Image (cartoon, rainbow, N blue to C red; front, top):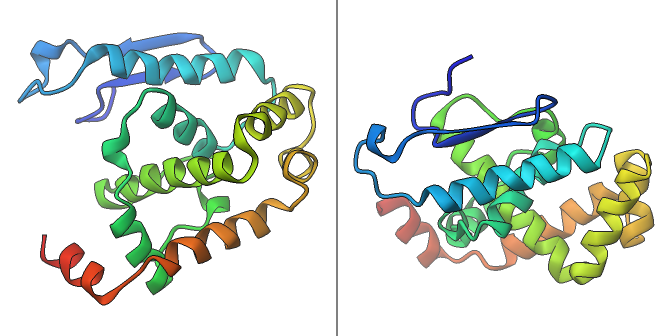
Length: 178
């Protein structure tokens, strides 16, 4: 298939194939192909190391943080969305991300923010244990319980509460006027 417009790279799950656009074919050309390659390599490592499906949000969150694509992390916007109850529930981001650009951008930001939250909660050791537990074949829910001692849904709730706590009216005004 063809990559969607605006997509700079893709990893084809199961086929162990990375596809990158040429920088010359992207208007503006203000992107680093090495950063995109690092992002896609994270997907390939997860795909080759874990036989079972890994949540899409986890794939993307890890790839964003490893490739240092921190422009996805607009914590002010995420805190506003959390305070308004407009975040996309993680279970809805298990298999795929939304098709519309705005919702897709929010999904990437949420993925990166939640994986960063997991790093704060359990450090690198927690994430490593989670990935090793998934690689050993444990279902996702069980892997989270074993790695963090807490159900995934509870971790998600705690992350949303943490984001909401950062919300302020000034954030809302700044976010909606930009």
